[in-house]
Image (cartoon, rainbow, N blue to C red; front, side, top):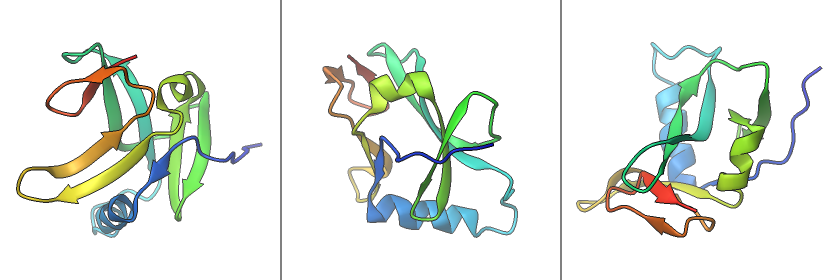
Length: 114
């Protein structure tokens, strides 16, 4: 039995719009979930994971604005309260992460320290 919990993360309207655009592509595999997480590495110690992936047995499942999301429970410690946005600007284009738990981050915006 799967339980859907309240998500510890937030997606802005821009992020939701871009994710739904990607999910509407003809080649999109609708069995995939949006995976949000962290991994060791990057110039600040931890890097963000954001992409479509299969659900794993130990994943927590969330639904945000109709988007199925999976995340490892342990990653919530690093991502609680994070806001994910999508930027279209000249200086920043792509997904951005506003993480209140990060003590520092690098210039590329995909790596952080706690």
